[in-house]
Amino acid sequence: MTALFALATSLLWGLADFGGGLLTRRAPALTVVVVSQSIAAVVLGAIVLTTGGWSEAGPRLWFAVAAGLVGPVALLAFYQALALGPMGVVSPLATFSVAVPVSVGLFLGERPGLLQVAGIAVAVAGVVLAGGPQLRGAPVQRRAVLLTLVAALGFGTVFVLITEASTNVTGLFLALFVQRVTNVVAGGAALYVSVRRGTPALPEGGLPPAALPAYGFVGLADVAANGTYAIAAQSGPVTVAAVLASLYPVVTTLAARGFLRERLRAVQAAGAGLALLGTLLLATG
Image (cartoon, rainbow, N blue to C red):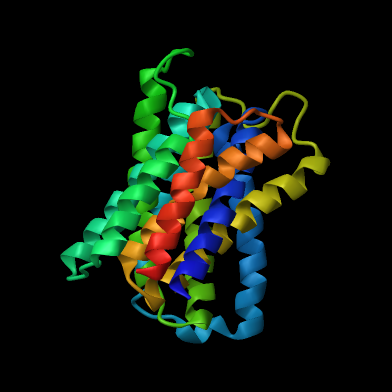
């Protein structure tokens, strides 16, 4: 179950990042974060009311609040880095997020077996290569690298916090709702400050209604990924769940290939194969 939910996390995050990166090329990153997370908060609020999730309110929700404060910073940094590009640098660097939950798991006493250690090494190497690291060619802005590392640290911290925010599925819905509301409040405040400083909140020509489904998809895919990761981490070793969940750059790369017709280079194809091999080692270890 851990492997299944962690891989679902990678799929959802990979598609959300692909969509978020595209939207940020047309609208300010803060606007993308606030609009997408607002849609997710509304849907989650309806789910919480339907399932009676308010009954699970307790001190653990402070972890969700903390995740909600860290999340927008990480998303904003990541979307801006994707917009700056090149994605062949941004995407692989983002996998460093796995270092945070894996370190926490090891600190708490988890000791993966030899086969799992090999799987972790192979999977992480595969993800980095699947992103197509650009060692030559397009110049890389220092700002893009710094933003990606900030995003990676933030994503890894959210991994840890959201796992501690609930103990059952009903409580998870409430925790995700609280996280999203905090996301919207924090992101909205930052957007207000940005507008006051003269930065436009909307793209030229405004936000077309036809784009709302895309924003909704990004927000809902992101929140669903948080949920599946929490289930994965609670049902098995955090070290395994975190590494399998970090395979999302492979999904982003394949989405770019499928939707944007970007050609996969040999290093990317090899990386995808290594990521799959590492996944198999982790799942069977």
